[in-house]
Length: 377
Ligand SMILES: *Cc1c(COP(=O)(O)O)cnc(C)c1O
Image (cartoon, rainbow, N blue to C red; front, side, top):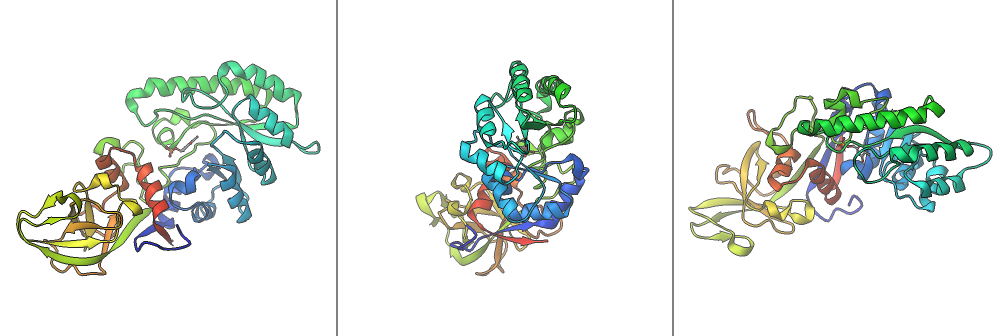
């Protein structure tokens, strides 16, 4: 979306806020910031460069392709592609770019072996199944895995990794504790052969809420971008001191009076109860504003919140600016973030997600993918 600006809305990424979040999360040596899926919509390369400046020593990306982009830009950190399901081409790309690929099953062992060279060993990680039941080696698979790896010293495992299913849910603590125990047991058997193998389990919620899940390396994602993993369900808790990095603006492209009884937008879903003033804003579902939010969201204009009314269109939405009579075309409206008057909270990705019945991750990915991004630092 960044080559050609089809829409006038903008996604503004505050890289200084990203760096402050990263520093707040702990010692860079113990962190592997997660920048998969274009850094949750914030932009892979600008985010990686900003984190590198803040001291990041490793990155977790989604695919080997994302890792290759980082290498081609000259970044030399350890890079772990998380996704799994790697094809033989993915394995070749991962080794060609000196990434740290993850073994997730027996097929991967064969693909890895096909890439290993005789003169140097292939460093890799092991994806362990402890409760997500998606990918990875289960505890009962470990003895065979160890035998295979010991028989093939060209494969050098240096990292064990697993993923928590409900670290953001204090009421599911028993599940997290059982994952921590399973991971501990798997790592013990691996480390009896490779004592310096590093262990990584915690995501943002684990890092912030379950110190016993931190092991050697934590993998924060959403917290880097300002999300509080425990904030779901409406309570905007900024207890961790994190700041949102993404704001989204769109220009006002028209202002008009509506008489009592006149409707606005498709389906006549909103009818003015009395005379009112509407601002037409150049943002819509094609630029990431979910149509399901129609009539159930607010935007920030002149530092104040105003209600959106009527159906959200593909590239436009309307807001009631009766209370802001100085609103004019080319004023800037904010769908996320933006400058707010004292006592007014900007609209956050958490609030938007709560209204929509989803999580802020989805809001950030969508807004970042569908709007032209600009950066401040
Ligand atoms: C996405 C992801 C993370 C980061 O999770 P957050 O909840 O965003 O902190 C960590 N580990 C793995 C394997 C992931 O896929």
